[in-house]
Amino acid sequence: MLLAAPRGYCAGVDRAVVAVEKALERYGSPVYVRKQIVHNVHVVKRLEEQGAVFVDEVDEVPTGSHVVFSAHGVAPAVVRAAADRGLQAIDATCPLVTKVHREAVRFARDDRHILLIGHHGHEEVEGTMGEAPERTTLVGSPEEADTVEVADPDNLVWLSQTTLSVDETMETVRRLRTRFPNLADPPSDDICYATQNRQVAVKKIARDADVVLVVGSANSSNSVRLVEVALDGGARASYRIDDASELDPAWLEGASTVGVTSGASVPERLVRDLLAVLAEHGYGTVEEVRTAEEDLVFSLPRELRRDASGNRDPRALGGRS
Ligand code: 2E6
Ligand code: F3S
Image 1 (cartoon, rainbow, N blue to C red):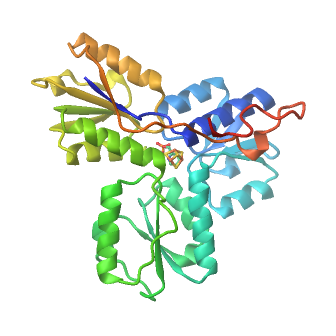
Image 2 (image 1 turned 180 degrees about the vertical axis):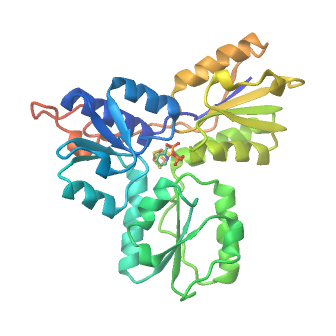
């Protein structure tokens, strides 16, 4: 068994989950959360059991209540709607998503047109596009790069969703640039460190694994990308599962080496459970294959940095540990 590292929780997911827990501790149940705090059914279920109430839109939240915005970010219109309703908002948007929002605002102010590479309908994309809807066009795939229409081809800059496949995004940019040679690059990577690190690690195990199992939920972009990267990287087969109960023993037939990884929104206990089941199937020797060390910790959302008596929370500062 080859176990990819890094895998599982990133700094932004950890911060968002802790934010909901702290809000529950401080304000009591219910604390409302707009959309899934992160895209994982088990995380959402556990927080529900602790008293969180997940809603689709802020108009479902009773006036005056606390509402947490998910790690994927929100459009400015959502922030305004929450304020208009008198809600106490706690913004758990990952700081690396906020960085992309800021880039979008800046380019729109400079009268540039943004080609945002990302998936149609994904919450992060909806939030980022909401910063400058008139000045942003979504490019959903390399194929869409071949057909997207723009008004001024010499005034373009590209940005991206944080959880895309690095290789596929580079292909999209390559195709865009053949049509728009003056397309400008973003000031820094938008695909986040966690997404990149998990893809490098899964690629490494995929070379030597017959089957790669990815723990993660169906709507988790970064988890689904890991299956694609494993297949591109040479795995004979790769499957996404929410937990060990979804493992189909038929997938293991004839496999001498099984690889395992997990998405950035996946608690490690789900991986441990899967390892226990794999051991029962004869894959009990585990080799961890590590391609990067991660030590990033983000400070809590501003609204939670002080405890109820006004003292600084130990997580207030964050930074590298
Ligand atoms: C926020 C932004 C990016 O579907 P996606 O991969 O974006 O989301 P999660 O919740 O599975 O992963 C963490 C995350 C949160 N990634
Ligand atoms: Fe943030 Fe990347 Fe995680 S954008 S929430 S660090 S997957």
